[in-house]
Length: 290
Picture 1 (cartoon, one colour):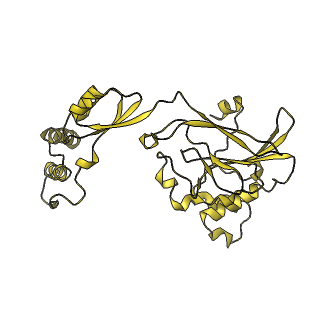
Picture 2: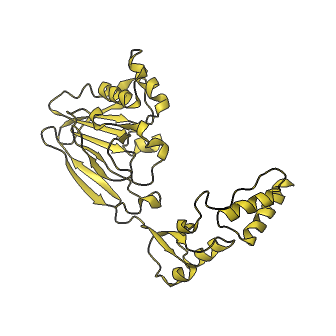
Picture 3: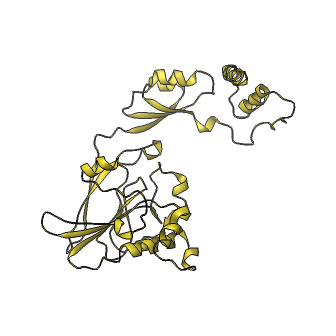
């Protein structure tokens, strides 16, 4: 990917480098204005200490939190944001406290332990462009901070988001002017609910579909839904029809019982009591057991 990116004039930084200068990218606009940008890729908790140790941490500093490490790292990288006639920019891949998730992020990387306060960004930055959260939004901070959001929805948790790209105009003497441009050609994601009879009556929606079926689970149900709604990507039983954990009969003991009997117990506890599903399980189990 790197040769392709360089040919297109794109600079990539996929990991924290031992030399902090490699994270500083600078240039001059066609109008002669100088700019400097800090490019900080996503940094896991596991490597946060290792990364900042490259820049001479004391033993006490090494025991601080993930947010402390990110703040110290950004402080080191933005030390040069002092020249009055230069535009200072930051790009970073991280989660900021108070920002809203878009629905398609990896939960493991948006938990509180990965969140940093907006105060990690320097007040003399002209603009901070963030990635990681999929919802376009402004973040209150000591300088202009914004997530551009995902230009395309990556799962149905993002169906309410409006895909867009963000255009920013900024100079060393003027504040950043932000303009959102909707991505009109993005394929919409929609959710529909109903019984098979109800789904057969609805007008075919545009876009890709998530379908919650109000039918008891059975073998072949997915195929029936896809025949009615060919653009259905995700088909699930409506959660309202699935028994809550612990609401069914007590789970039988495992000792002395066959896999088929145990699977039948599981199906019954989840409201999936269907002969066709049990027969499919038997076929698969026989193939594995041969």
